[in-house]
Length: 324
Image 1: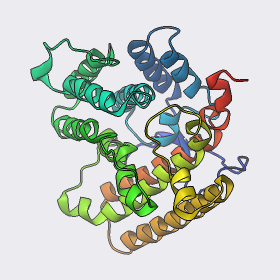
Image 2 (image 1 turned 90 degrees about the horizontal axis):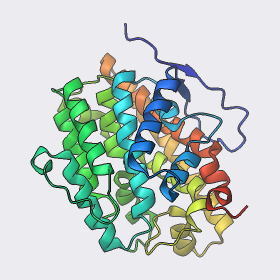
Image 3 (image 1 turned 180 degrees about the vertical axis):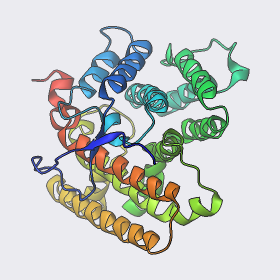
């Protein structure tokens, strides 16, 4: 029997949490916090803007985002998961303020940290700095821990860094935007990481069968992030805004409040569609791996929604920017 690594979270006391999805938190919170701080301290300079942003990001009294999103992951693997995603999050906070061409160049430099053939390459770009060496170290740790399944995961990471923020298109509709936004939110990477860290193995037939459910939850996660993060993102200085709120404002000539209400309704509809797809999957005999993967994806999306609804990063962004 697979051990249970998490405990349920009571979401009923959070008025802004509007999801039906379950939320659980990993029992090994101290180890997850330690892995998070290791990434922050290794990938930012003490007292820098990036360091302060990372610390503020993890000031949520309701829980660490990785503990909330990935409650059923093996803790030894989850620690590597945390370090990689935290590195990417730190990098994102930096590169989203760069000119697009400069951001793409630094993504290419960071990608080199995934490949042994670049281990002697000391180029750290404009903003990559120590993140490249840290990525190499984490890559090697993952390969040592799981030499069989890690190479495929490294390929998924490489593809993500290659395509991240790569489009210059000014999307005009939500229908055009969402196929870009889901992978750009790191969903494909985190879904693969979830299988890796939960020791779930699905063949091509299984992955094809679960794909529509998986991708629908990816839309829920990406749009939920847009819904809550807009309070922060609307004040950022950037040459590209990637958020569904201003897109809906432009698409339907709406005020901001109306666009947010519309977006919330779209998220609820997508959650309903995901639930129907899960029930369709469950109408036939499923393997234990498939059942666990469905649960892992729901916990990921539910944890993301709960963290987004409670974190100061999105709900009190003025404090991060130092305007209060």
